[in-house]
Image (tube, rainbow, N blue to C red; front, side):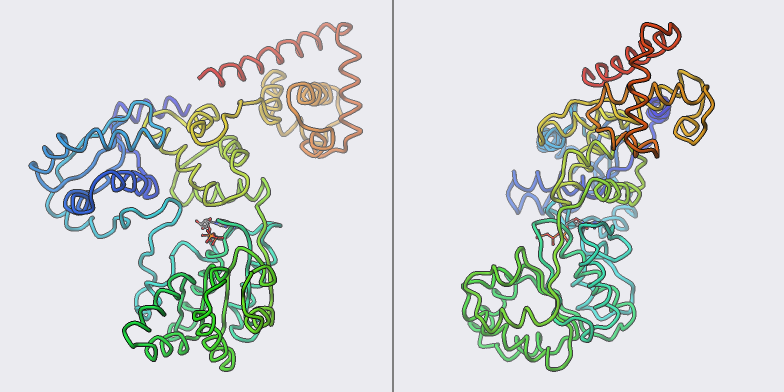
Amino acid sequence: MLAAQDRAARMKGEVRVITQEIWADVLGYVRKNISEVEYHTWFAPVKNLGVQDGALVIGVRNSFAQEWFRKHYLELLEDALRALGAQNPQVSFQVLPAAQDALLLPSDPPPGRPPGRPPAGGPPAGLPTENRKTLNPKYTFENFVVGPNNNLAHAAALAVAESPGKAYNPLFIYGDVGLGKTHLMHAVGHYIMERFPEKRIEYVSTESFTNELINAIRDDKTTQFRNRYRSVDLLLVDDIQFLAGKERTQEEFFHTFNALYENHKQIILSSDRPPKDIQTLEGRLRSRFEWGLITDIQSPEFETRVAILKMNAEHNRIDIPQEVLELIARQVTSNIRELEGALMRVVAFASLNSVPFSRAVAAKALSNVFAPQEVKVEMMDVLRSTAAHFNMPPDVIRGSGRVREVVVPRQVAMYLIRELTDHSLPEIGQFFGRDHSTVMHAVSKVTEQLGKDPDLTASVDALRRHLQDVEDEENDT
Ligand SMILES: Nc1ncnc2c1ncn2[C@@H]1O[C@H](COP(=O)(O)OP(=O)(O)OP(=O)(O)O)[C@@H](O)[C@H]1O
């Protein structure tokens, strides 16, 4: 079905959207390979026009630029696409109509942005300008998937957003790289910004705070520096573990902290470890970090990872089958930034090779980056095939019906899942809404009947062959 749609789209020459993330990766690759001057001269003004007939179409300002790009940058752009997983990368250049050129360029992402970090863009009009540039528009509570790994941090952040300076001060969020600490901090910022547009919000990484302080000392502007940070209503400081060993910065931050705290201004800190594990952090700072609430974010479980992928796909208006999202979620288990990167790779791969999304395509797209994963038959595949074989809807097989016409297909499906997948009896039971003893019974029942009941034996054999063929085909694609 998808393949047919895809072919039709190609025949009509329809444009497939290429997401900002992929485009940012292409530009990032180019930028690493040419000089800054060259990049700004040629690449800053171009526009991503999507994928048409399997080729990435790049909008350029005039025919001179078109020719120049063909001669000088075609190979580099093809290499960039290859690095993203395109097997037979193609690029074409199209001259932009003057008006489109003028209108579209400002919305492009800033070049060279690291993958997975969307561009800071335009929050609602009428807000103080410093807030606008501070917060990433994607990092809101609505865009944050809550799971068992982060629900405490999420609840704490929400409480702080509702009662800044009163609920928990400071709020200290820690966890490994790419698990959503910055996202949650910004979400609090957005929440407060929407309700109290006059509030001053400052987001700063510890590294920037340190550099700004060094510059302020050098330029004799420490008073301005202090005024800036001590006059905010909400201070968000990322990666506070980098304060370790920086005595002068710790001293300055200590006074900033006190000034804000005494005035009941909210402080949120993020770190890759809890305060007690930050070495060479002054005791007085460590104890202050422990005054409020310390909460952590863990790696997301499978279901949360799938939900995050689903939300990302929906945001980008990309329709990806559930089983493909599940395959991606199995490949990337700890870092959400990498998880999002993997999704974009799969999207880029499918888009640039003009193939529909399938598990085999996803496995291939990710094979350069992650250990290749064999595409295995899943419970849902067995259920669907069994349902088709017995000519009944999958939900009926999983339902509560106890008549023989339903019970036999259910037992066959359970038996084949046990045989062809690595799932445990309780997992299979859960999939069918039953307990493991029911599955055990089904497996022994079918085992016992095989060879004796010709119909049942023929069904199991046919289904097994069919499912193994699907697996082989997918792995050979
Ligand atoms: N629960 C979630 N729901 C949706 N997206 C999430 C979630 N957690 C993280 N992300 C996304 O994952 C990416 C990385 O998140 P973020 O930058 O907040 O991580 P971090 O913990 O601050 O990492 P670092 O330690 O590198 O600063 C972002 O694009 C963010 O939107």
